[in-house]
Length: 122
Image (tube, rainbow, N blue to C red; front, side, top):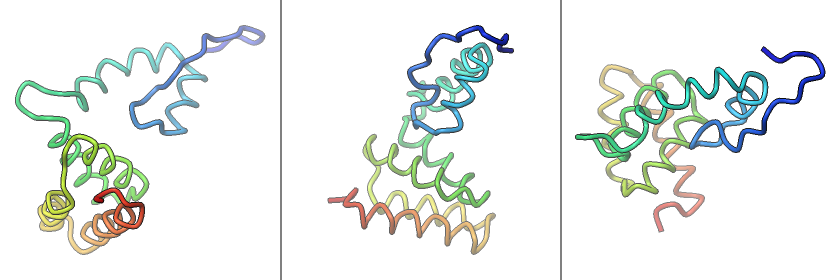
Protein backbone atom coordinates (compact mmCIF):
# COMPACT_ATOMS: atom_id res chain seq x y z
CA UNK A 1 0.00 0.00 0.00
CA UNK A 2 1.20 3.52 -0.76
CA UNK A 3 2.40 5.62 2.13
CA UNK A 4 1.30 9.23 2.06
CA UNK A 5 3.97 11.42 0.50
CA UNK A 6 5.89 8.45 -0.92
CA UNK A 7 6.45 8.50 -4.65
CA UNK A 8 5.93 5.11 -6.27
CA UNK A 9 8.13 3.97 -9.17
CA UNK A 10 6.72 4.56 -12.63
CA UNK A 11 5.29 1.51 -14.33
CA UNK A 12 5.58 1.49 -18.13
CA UNK A 13 2.70 -0.87 -18.81
CA UNK A 14 0.87 -3.21 -16.52
CA UNK A 15 -0.61 -5.14 -19.40
CA UNK A 16 0.26 -6.03 -22.98
CA UNK A 17 -3.20 -4.72 -23.81
CA UNK A 18 -2.76 -1.24 -22.35
CA UNK A 19 -5.97 -1.34 -20.33
CA UNK A 20 -6.43 1.90 -18.34
CA UNK A 21 -7.54 -0.06 -15.26
CA UNK A 22 -4.29 -2.07 -15.30
CA UNK A 23 -2.21 1.10 -15.54
CA UNK A 24 -4.17 2.61 -12.64
CA UNK A 25 -3.68 -0.53 -10.56
CA UNK A 26 0.07 -0.55 -11.28
CA UNK A 27 0.27 3.05 -10.13
CA UNK A 28 -1.85 2.45 -7.05
CA UNK A 29 -0.24 -0.83 -5.98
CA UNK A 30 2.99 -1.57 -7.87
CA UNK A 31 3.77 -4.59 -5.67
CA UNK A 32 0.51 -6.32 -6.57
CA UNK A 33 0.88 -5.44 -10.25
CA UNK A 34 4.45 -6.77 -10.26
CA UNK A 35 3.33 -10.04 -8.63
CA UNK A 36 0.43 -10.43 -11.07
CA UNK A 37 2.59 -9.77 -14.13
CA UNK A 38 4.38 -13.15 -14.41
CA UNK A 39 1.12 -15.12 -14.14
CA UNK A 40 -0.45 -12.95 -16.82
CA UNK A 41 2.61 -13.41 -19.04
CA UNK A 42 2.35 -17.19 -18.67
CA UNK A 43 -1.36 -17.04 -19.48
CA UNK A 44 -1.31 -14.83 -22.58
CA UNK A 45 2.22 -15.32 -23.88
CA UNK A 46 3.50 -17.94 -26.30
CA UNK A 47 2.95 -21.36 -24.77
CA UNK A 48 4.56 -24.74 -25.29
CA UNK A 49 1.59 -26.00 -27.28
CA UNK A 50 -0.84 -23.09 -27.69
CA UNK A 51 0.19 -20.06 -29.72
CA UNK A 52 -0.71 -16.53 -28.68
CA UNK A 53 -3.33 -16.51 -31.45
CA UNK A 54 -5.08 -19.56 -30.00
CA UNK A 55 -4.79 -18.35 -26.40
CA UNK A 56 -6.42 -15.09 -27.48
CA UNK A 57 -9.29 -17.00 -29.04
CA UNK A 58 -9.99 -18.74 -25.74
CA UNK A 59 -9.96 -15.36 -23.99
CA UNK A 60 -12.23 -13.86 -26.69
CA UNK A 61 -14.85 -16.57 -26.14
CA UNK A 62 -14.91 -16.01 -22.39
CA UNK A 63 -15.05 -12.23 -22.69
CA UNK A 64 -17.83 -12.42 -25.30
CA UNK A 65 -19.81 -14.67 -22.96
CA UNK A 66 -19.27 -12.20 -20.11
CA UNK A 67 -20.38 -9.26 -22.29
CA UNK A 68 -17.00 -7.52 -22.00
CA UNK A 69 -17.18 -5.89 -25.43
CA UNK A 70 -14.10 -3.67 -25.07
CA UNK A 71 -12.07 -6.70 -24.04
CA UNK A 72 -13.35 -8.76 -26.97
CA UNK A 73 -12.19 -6.09 -29.42
CA UNK A 74 -8.84 -5.67 -27.67
CA UNK A 75 -8.11 -9.39 -27.64
CA UNK A 76 -9.26 -9.78 -31.24
CA UNK A 77 -6.78 -7.08 -32.25
CA UNK A 78 -3.98 -9.00 -30.58
CA UNK A 79 -5.11 -12.26 -32.18
CA UNK A 80 -4.99 -10.56 -35.59
CA UNK A 81 -1.51 -9.23 -34.79
CA UNK A 82 -0.52 -12.85 -34.21
CA UNK A 83 -1.99 -14.16 -37.45
CA UNK A 84 -5.70 -14.71 -36.83
CA UNK A 85 -7.95 -14.21 -39.83
CA UNK A 86 -11.45 -12.79 -39.79
CA UNK A 87 -12.77 -16.29 -40.51
CA UNK A 88 -10.84 -17.80 -37.59
CA UNK A 89 -12.24 -15.17 -35.24
CA UNK A 90 -15.74 -15.80 -36.55
CA UNK A 91 -15.39 -19.55 -36.02
CA UNK A 92 -14.09 -18.95 -32.48
CA UNK A 93 -17.18 -16.84 -31.82
CA UNK A 94 -19.39 -19.59 -33.26
CA UNK A 95 -17.80 -22.11 -30.90
CA UNK A 96 -18.33 -19.81 -27.90
CA UNK A 97 -21.94 -19.17 -28.94
CA UNK A 98 -22.92 -22.83 -28.47
CA UNK A 99 -22.57 -22.74 -24.67
CA UNK A 100 -22.81 -18.94 -24.45
CA UNK A 101 -25.93 -18.28 -26.50
CA UNK A 102 -27.08 -15.35 -28.61
CA UNK A 103 -25.55 -12.56 -26.52
CA UNK A 104 -22.12 -14.20 -26.89
CA UNK A 105 -22.60 -14.45 -30.64
CA UNK A 106 -23.74 -10.83 -30.84
CA UNK A 107 -20.80 -9.56 -28.81
CA UNK A 108 -18.30 -11.45 -30.94
CA UNK A 109 -19.81 -10.53 -34.29
CA UNK A 110 -20.05 -6.86 -33.32
CA UNK A 111 -16.37 -6.89 -32.35
CA UNK A 112 -15.44 -8.39 -35.73
CA UNK A 113 -17.55 -5.73 -37.44
CA UNK A 114 -15.70 -3.01 -35.51
CA UNK A 115 -12.32 -4.43 -36.55
CA UNK A 116 -13.55 -4.63 -40.13
CA UNK A 117 -14.53 -0.92 -40.02
CA UNK A 118 -11.06 -0.12 -38.65
CA UNK A 119 -9.40 -1.97 -41.54
CA UNK A 120 -7.87 -4.72 -39.41
CA UNK A 121 -8.38 -7.35 -42.09
CA UNK A 122 -7.11 -5.36 -45.10
